[in-house]
Amino acid sequence: MSTFDPITTQEERGWAMAAHLAALVLALLTSWLVGVAGVIGAGAIWLLKRDSSPFIAEHAREAVNFNLSMLVYAAVALAFGAVLVGATVLTLGLGVILTLPAGLALLVAVMAIAVMWLVCSILAAIAAWNGQRYRYPLSIRILN
Image (cartoon, rainbow, N blue to C red; front, side, top):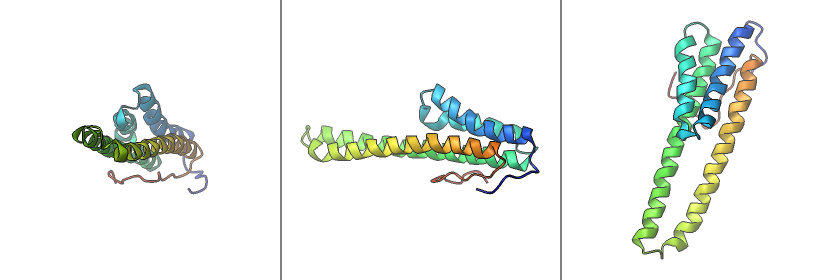
């Protein structure tokens, strides 16, 4: 994160913060909907404001990329969970000896990613309001 940029206006900081909060609020209101709502919320602000301010565009792009990344991670976790359930069913329940610990590890990983998503979204919104840059961890840079 960089220090406060006095060149950014309060309106720019508000829009940048809104990109992070729109993703957060929409995802929470739609029961997380595996990141789709977060992408739509941040994406709408990116589409509307990307040409009017580089600061807003940067924050909105970061929010879109992060929420798209969370969508990818959720899809991978869902696929892995389906494989674990399938392995348990195919072994007529005997595979639960191996799949139960793996399933619990998957659950812990998903919960850790969810907490990271929540905390990082809040930190990004605060950084935007303070006129600072923010780079999400574990974010796949899809939009440039």
